[in-house]
Image (cartoon, rainbow, N blue to C red; front, side):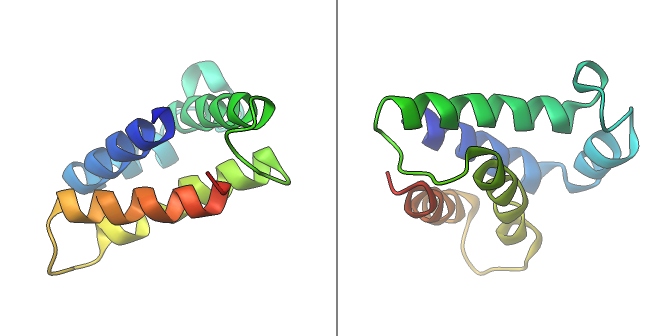
Length: 104
């Protein structure tokens, strides 16, 4: 459920703020300084969520960091395309795909 909430927030944000996302997460700050780089902070949050889920047996992930990077790059693709579905349906589909990735 926590993972679904994180993915829903990411998809919604990406869809509503594509240009701002690029400015904040790719152009601003030092990409190696978590305290000043929102993208790295988001990545760290997702890593921690995936680690906790793995430790509790909720997820079956062979490599948490690689999986976090995959999810962070994969969720945004559907929000950039011109799809005939709305954001709610896109969110549902992306959440389902992410659950498959983590084998939840």
